[in-house]
Image (cartoon, rainbow, N blue to C red):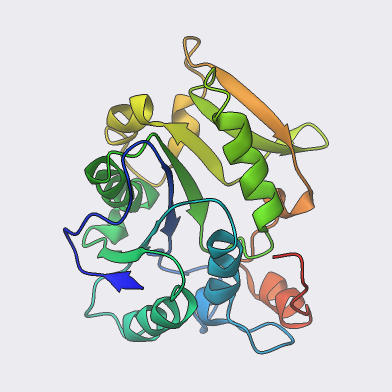
Length: 222
């Protein structure tokens, strides 16, 4: 179900997820990357949402570009259809052109309203991340000894990243086209890593990558 802005969609102390989907898609050519379809006809955004909706996250917030943009209605329709089984809210990043941090702030503000214990920051153009990876991050987070939980594959850190609520204020101070990676260098930050799979390193934001995505079939590993 998609809720209206301002309505709490989760219980305090839970882990929520935000999906950053307000990018300009400037590198992917004429087609908006989140509307690109795989070999089964499933859009990239729908496939990203499927993994989250099948996971242990208690609620979702999808951050989209301003309503005036041509693709926004199509993206909202995908959210409405994909998230019927989990509390979900759409928020608009009116300053999306300022970069990733602007959309991140919108999502984190929503997570703070929910009084969530943690927030998983997911990227809309990483559709191969399944619920097994997401749940592994959440289970590690629930051990309670980490400020941030990072997925890794062959020693390389990827996305999504799960942040403890104590980091929310710092995340809202970021500027420009960067996400929470800028905070990871802080020595006081308690970091935990979870072994994942190649999906945590795979985004699709160029014409060649979208062509590869178009030949992928949706699997049962959501």
